[in-house]
Length: 277
Image (cartoon, rainbow, N blue to C red):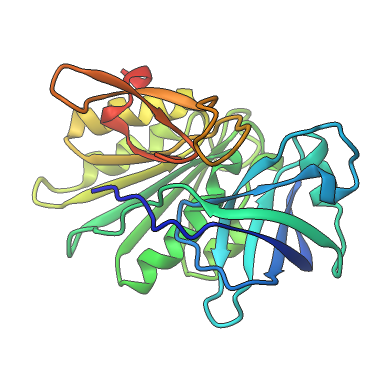
């Protein structure tokens, strides 16, 4: 069951410790100037003003926390250069400062039944929060299978981090440049079909909404619980503006309501999100 994380987000400055290339992305290691304790699935909101980008773009940008070291307090962001802020972050150097708000949002649930398999499904940069989740699950002894899909091999991220956890992901690219040609849901469905009826599984996914919709249909066919982390443009990041809302079922049977990706999410039970039907 999803639960909202305790309210402990804060505004702080993080120092860049390292910037490690990961294909076309950057794996940033950041050291905050305050104590933070993020959970897998949460994100941080970065302000462009501290990145010397002037007033354009004006709003903060969200980035999933891709890992956290409890001993050092350092956390990581996996950044794909898709806009001005992410391009700037991709090029930061050790010692530079970043203005951060977080950790924010509702995390992934970790209540995977004993003996069950966690199936992680990522589309492109959607692997970021699943790396952190994979670490938490493997620390608990949960068998974890990972599937990563992307348009091309340059957009396959997170493999070094997963390899450090002894997880060898199944790879798919739409152009066939690496791994299997096609969509990531293909090998996921074959894997699910091989599970025995007595085998339990829980799906955790992050990626574009069409991928999450396909994952939701797959999970429904096989009766598997599925949680997804949604990607959305966010203005405030704290639930005040309602600009990142999605429609979901409830709270009463037969009713629908709007949920905020930044505060009620970004993680949702996929069967509750109306737009994925």
